[in-house]
Image: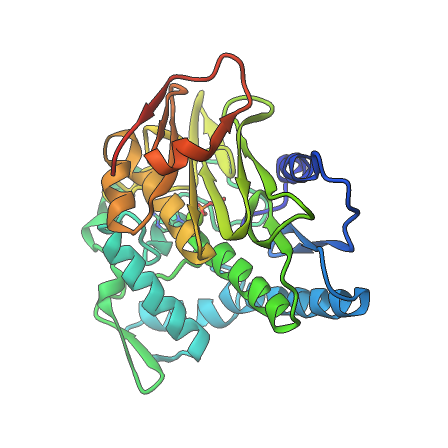
Length: 348
Ligand code: ADP
Ligand code: MG
């Protein structure tokens, strides 16, 4: 849920260009929504034009509602829950937040705590809870240490009879690591309710497809985290998601160093070692959380984290440009740069 940037719109264009490559059929219904602080492209390939329009409008309304309900810092339902946690009180939670807390707890457990939606205080301390972009300077080491010492964890949370309470007032929920995935899953669910079988929902390069793009699969570009274009592509059809977490999405530079928005809950600092991670999965909420978790895990332990999260298709590009992939990912990835980067296939 980060701010719209020229970078994101450029990237969306790259993905669309790639997915259009070699396709002759016109898209029946292709809409760009500016929602959740990003450009969301809904492309519907089948059904009736009126059905597509109604379904797209419903998707737009749903995403706008989620943006209001789940925003981590603009005052609303989630900030009210966080205020209650901070003051040691219980708070009512609706079924959607209950489900997100439950899934977030499970994904956090699977990732060994590398994905941790309870670290809202740390994200805020780093200045990433701001509408006009983060700018630094980095926070004091002492402030980071003091937040780490309070060890906010999803396991501190308990829900009984629709009320949430926390054993730990330092927990602050920030769903930024998987909210976009959940939003895309919801969008696809709505399209399916309208009997749409061939579509793609793409939020700034993170996407889920159902069905096919005409006679061919969709071709999805994976952005080069350090270059101007696409480093690789994968063909996707059926029901699959492609999610990438990168250190180029949201960051500030201070005294020549880059401080990005994916925080290692162990250190309290932006995760080191990765520059991007791409995950393929059948559920966008899982792909989104896993991309964040594997990014934090970094080049040495990403494959174990992938296995623990049930991910068998993933690719990590480290901060030196080396590419690490699972065998299943390597099998289907086509490199678009010549010569291809150094590649290491790692069995999870
Ligand atoms: P993007 O939204 O740019 O695709 P991610 O999916 O990786 O990127 O999510 C990054 C966001 O997730 C941050 O802006 C922050 O809100 C939240 N976040 C940062 N670090 C973590 C973490 N270790 N676990 C869970 N959420 C995180
Ligand atoms: Mg994520």
